[in-house]
Length: 496
Image 1 (cartoon, helix red, strand yellow):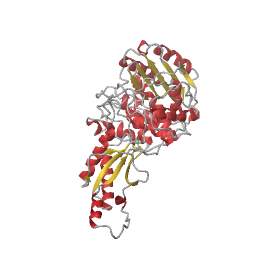
Image 2 (tube, rainbow, N blue to C red):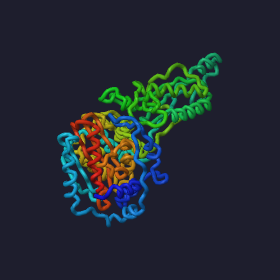
Image 3 (cartoon, rainbow, N blue to C red):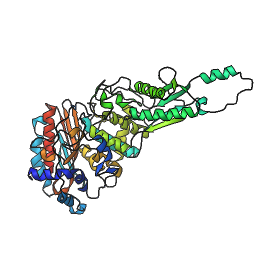
Image 4 (cartoon, rainbow, N blue to C red):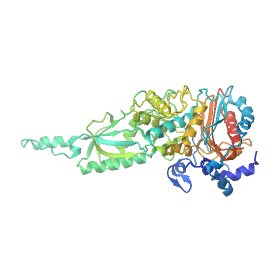
């Protein structure tokens, strides 16, 4: 194993190095000074992370390491010149085998390590055994959404009306109509409907812009008073996640503001547990109505839930960021609300109900269509909060390898969205122990944590400059802290 100083020297180049190690793999999406914009916006300074039972707080971060031009030069070698040592599988068995037997990982943990360039499984232990994945299931959510929707798809929230007065139509009328009748008709408020499209990132800033556009459109049509309705019919089935009311996720509705958060976390960056509203859609409609009044419109009573008419005329629309950015934010922050939104968007694209059941069917069908090893998988939700979810470590590494496939650039946000060990998201405060420090800055991985369930799946540049995908799943672990340290140690060994 190389001395820690050598690995610390490489930490500053890890984000770029893990991709260059795959040779021809070119990352898709917007870049800004070497770091993806979505990661820059949402990954840095995340204090409260979004998976189940991820504690809040601001753990100390290791000092940044200098970059190493020599390392980047070697990693930039053509893929044909990169080859894992012939004895690597035997070496992994020797190093990972004993670590996997740690009691901190429960009685029978599962593991899979794959050479991304060749697809060869270099190490496997119960790799085909379905186990509870916790939030690592979000990797499957991400692959399915990107594959079905495309990275550029955006989720819209619209305001519509079917009222003739708002359309500015001149119906003519009979010459005998009285002036009093016309006045009475003109005094009726115009009915407008805020239609939820399933955007879990809709916030007050974008609702304000939507209200501004709506008010302008209505003023142009001579409308000064409205009756506000809101439509959440895009989703079906239960709103509550099977875990019940929980600070880690809001009721799953097609319309929400700030993910239904009732504290200040909705004002800056989402992520992490927070008290949630029991009626996110109604609250969002109330905010929208308030914003309309601020812009000079009168409203007749509080918003009412009602399905928009089929012949409705669109007044205004606001769009989410592209799915590529939503995927990155979901993975970095372990955002459960975005996860449930993305699987429902996948279901809608497939023509299935946008419900827990419909999303499960759509995601599994999409992964099966991609010839991924979905045998034994049971994806009851998109977030991993459901303890009945089942996935194999072999499927997780196959998903990661597929995301690195040069022929599938649309899936690249799966890799770029993974938290960086010791730097961002749910890995910000990890890899600080002496037996895991070599992984700091070198590993990108999705965490998973439920009571008694701990998981880690991601990528690392291993011996010979090869990009490795790994997945470790543990059930009945005695404690989350010791299990996480054991998982960090396991993955750090892949750097040597």
